[in-house]
Length: 82
Image 1 (cartoon, rainbow, N blue to C red):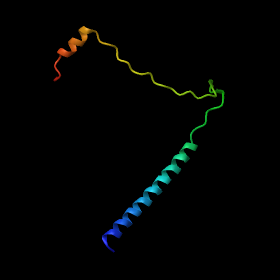
Image 2 (image 1 turned 180 degrees about the horizontal axis):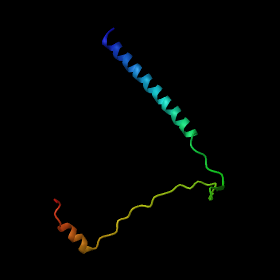
Image 3 (image 1 turned 90 degrees about the vertical axis):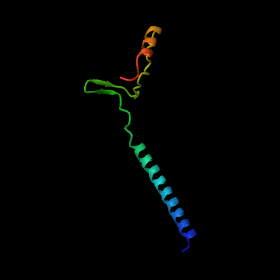
């Protein structure tokens, strides 16, 4: 075999392998997507009332308090090296 046919075989095998891994990843994603937990039915479980609608919990955005002009100047006067 000459060099061109060897390189063509390597490229073909790599392409086929990549496509097979892509298909396997897609199938695994779809299987995982089907296994997601369903929302709980409304009712009372262990003394806690459950609702039908699942509401996600969102974190609040951190907003730093603004510095006054005096505090800002004091911070700039401090040396950076400890």
